[in-house]
Amino acid sequence: MSQSAFIKLVQGSAVSELPLEELKEKLIHYREQTALTGTQLDWDYAKAAFPYTFESKQDDRWFYLQGTNPGYKYIVFGNGDEGPSTIQVVLPDGSTHGDKAKANELCKYLAKQLLAELTMFNGRTIYYNPRK
Image (cartoon, rainbow, N blue to C red; front, side, top):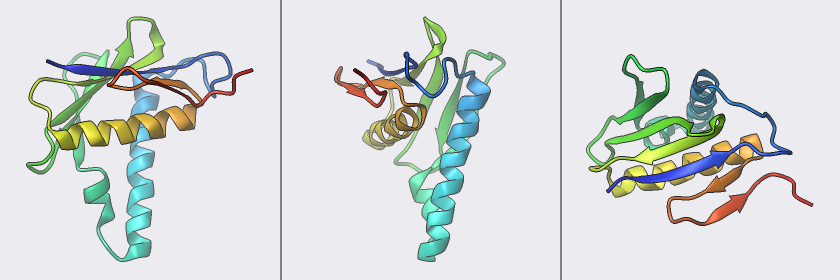
């Protein structure tokens, strides 16, 4: 059975909406940052930190990350039912434990960058947005 996590852009978030192209750019930035870390360590850390390629079908409502080694299969990113103010991250049937761990890491990274509210795969919520 597939599992979903949600990143909600709420009042106080860095942006009010995040189209999928901008989401892709944030993930590319993450990949570039891990590559720079690898350069400092003199190790190809980018392949270990982001073992995926970007793939999409002819549908502009979602895209997925395709694993590049046997420990990773795929993670799907799309806008939730509320539109571009919610990002839904889905682990489809057949996803590995590595996919879930990497999806958790990417969700936390994105939510922290966006100052958003993150509902994890286990149903727990992490608030990165300033609340009063």
